[in-house]
Amino acid sequence: MCLQETKTVSFTDNRCFSLWGDSNIGWVHYEGDNGAGSMLSMWHKDKFCYDSHVVGIGFIAVVGQHIKSSCMCFVVNIYAAYNHSAKITLWEALTSLKRSYQNMAECFCRDFNAVRREDERWV
Image 1 (cartoon, rainbow, N blue to C red):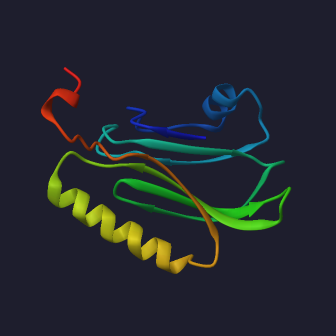
Image 2: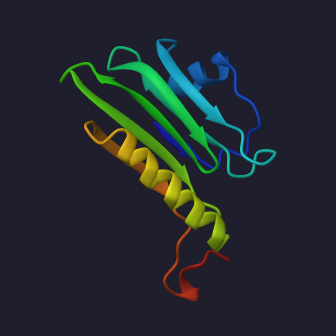
């Protein structure tokens, strides 16, 4: 599960267990800037075998094995800033990450905060 913009600076096992409804989970949290841009990535340990993770500004990448298929993969939780230069930095980091794990299946869960027209913005 990938949650973006949690607005939470810190999480505990108990809070994550209550969100999922089970204690057999793993999780990684990125606190963002005092809660702004924060993200939470969670997985059930019966379905996904955690190996490692990478946290960067605007993303969490969790690397592991999908147990049913035995496929190594990485799941990236992305929450992009509105700032154009920060988006470019994020895209560069994601490109580098993709190259690092090029032999694995991938899943990108994202909120790129991108709009094509001004009327698409939330008011």
